[in-house]
Amino acid sequence: MATHIKRAIIYIALIALATVCILPFILMMVNATRSGREIMTSFTFIPGNSLQENWETVSGYFNLFLGFWNSLKVAIPATILTSYFSAITAYALAIYKFKGRNLIFYTIVIFMMIPGQLGLIGFYNLVSSLKLVNSYIPLIVPAIAAPGTVFFLRQYVLSVLPPSLLEAARIDGAGEFHIFHRIVLPIMVPGVATMAIGGFIGNWNAYLVPLILLNTPKKFTLPVMIASLNSSTDIASNQGAIYLAVAISVIPILIVFCFCSKYIISSISAGGVKE
Amino acid sequence: MAETMTETKKVKRRNYNNVAYIMVAPFVIVFLIFSVYPVLRTLQLSFTDYKGYGELNFTGLKNYLRVLTDKYFWKSLGNTLNIWILNIVLQLGLAFLLTIIFSDIKYKIKGLSIFRCIFYLPNIIATTSVAFLFKTLLDWRYGTVNQILYKLGIVSSPIDWLGQTETAPYVASVILSWMWFGNSFIMLMAGVQGINKDYFEAAAIDGAGRWTVFGKITLPLLKPILLYVSITSLIGGLQMFDLPFLMFNGTKGDPLGVTQTMVMYMYKFGFETHQVGYASAIAYVLFTLILVVSLIQFKVMNGKED
Image (cartoon, rainbow over all chains, first blue to last red; front, side, top):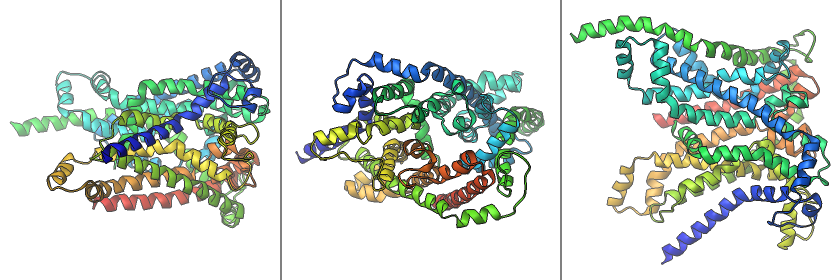
């Protein structure tokens, strides 16, 4: 009997905690449909009818769709580059024996521990001397070299790829690149997908680097655009519009999460059992 | 027969292996340009009085001496730790409690995968959006949080959450732990699930109680992961930027600079006041601090394996 009661208490506590996780998002969605005046004077879970009005206010400040489009233009190519080049680098490091292999591997391990901010100033300096400030190139091209992803995928290749498969393919006369693209890459798909989703979310949410590199509103990615709310609004009169803008920025990631939560959870779990 | 097989294999291998250079070349080239070079360039700039333009004048260790005697730098370290400590206590405490609950052999709590997803939800949202969401919810005069508290009769006058030194840093801590406890929980839970089931079965056969099982099996095997999570959190925490930057009026770190973190301080010199050389030195002092923490981590991890 006591066990039943305790179990019930635990479930109630868990549901309460889950509510704490979701509540701010619910308030956000509800408030996005209410007018600034309504939000100021009362609070409720019943949606209001100012969605249209808030949307007009938001579109008066900035073009969120442009922000969306800009974020996609950065996040998709960056994710594809990270996935493909990390996979091929990881495969090469795992399978072939060549001079410099250990040097590359240890450099990767060292750079995984170096904080991103360390090179930030040198990075900006490099980008400005290459005259690439306010361009997407420095946000996309560096994605080719993602040490953490290479590290993870190297372990992954070693654990999923039977060496006999390579021997068999070679005996059949397949070229090395052919083997990688036709045989190895399909086997690596689950691992690559896990890293790709994490990479996409990271790129989509990135703030600091786009902030220092992009200086015209036309080029702003979604997070930089949302952050520009800081300087462009009088918060008191436009709360409904702010909630709406934030809600719009959050929804695509929520959709990705609904479909890919399994992969996301497994990528974090991989971090937990790595050591 | 077998010997000749390996012989031919070895000969062929040698030819295959050259392909690897082509395969790793894009990674290596981009890595050298966009990762290694900026780190070294920052090091070089840290010994100059570079302002973002013009020539490099080497000033030796001047910038480093300035960092070490800059009381605002140390204050920003203190601020960062102040925000981080409450965050890690809440975040790890909650994650740990959840791990105990979900791994309990008596209660057999169900719904792990659903709860895990919901608890992780706050972490996938862009910090920019989280910052604005809470900034608006916690607004002094018109925020929903104060309205709820007022309605429930908990407060009689609105609390200026973001504007007073007693609450502002801790509001940031709580939001950060809200964002990260799910992540820690997933990692700890993965650690528990990685424990060989035989241990638990053997313990059950021996008639060990659930607290004995927890104290003698689960906890010791979980310790390395617990350390790993807390140390990676400290490394991440020392680089805290987005959330306080957006919630507390940019690099000033209002109110009264108590939410100004180290990276905000570096950003201020690097990108606002154009003392690029000084900002680079701050970056390297920050790096040194993180390096020390990482080395401790390494020591702890290796100690476990011995």
